Image 1 (tube, rainbow over the protein chains, first blue to last red):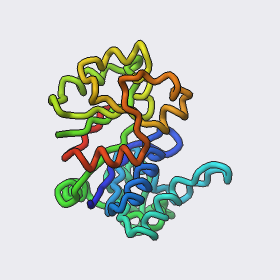
Image 2 (cartoon, rainbow over the protein chains, first blue to last red; image 1 turned 135 degrees about the vertical axis):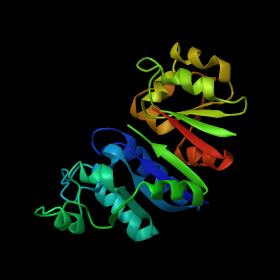
Image 3 (cartoon, one colour; image 1 turned 90 degrees about the vertical axis):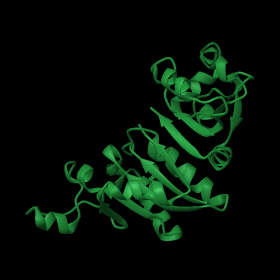
Amino acid sequence: MRYALLVQGAPYSHQAAHSALRFASALIDRGHRLETVFFYHDGIYNAQRLATPPQDEPHLIEAWQRLHHEQGTALLVCVAAALKRGVIDERESQRHGKQGHSLAASFELTGVGQLIEAAMTHDRLVTFSP
Amino acid sequence: MQLHLLNRSVASSHVYRDALRAMSDDDYLLLIEDGVYGAVAPLVEHFSSIAGRLFALREDLESRGLEGRCAESVIVVDTEGFVQLTEETERTVSWF
């Protein structure tokens, strides 16, 4: 089956990202496809380019990027939720006259319409909230 | 048929009441994260109306040192079992 996950919890603050990643690997092991992860509200902090956790702690941002590289999972970040929290890609940075950008590679800023789209086009949508 | 997910302890949040009210007779409830505190007596009594349809996530019980204290009426599943529950049910509703 085609799965989508909605992640609304910030990494290292709540268990949501851990639970979602554990669920992601279990569903892949059962032969399903994880096509989309949508990050909303404080969940957008999962896309922080400069996150640098200690080496003996799980690197959640890299775990999401691994899913993208190995499974082709789309990592969609709500643009409105991200910009106001300072998670911004190069294009938006230029558009708003900012220096630097903070969105990690493999993540993309999208509208919340993509979440509705995911709910309609995937077989399952599971929400992990703080 | 729907799967409901609850990640709050019944001792700290009343959202479980909304979940129970919203559940149909054949829906399942899976306790995850801090929700698993509700799998232990006497808190588990809050879920007496859904006996046989109450699940708790093993990994979250273990990480809280609760596995041996889980009530017998609760069905313990690991994350693979969690995925299986989402296969069996049409929709998943998260309460938080």
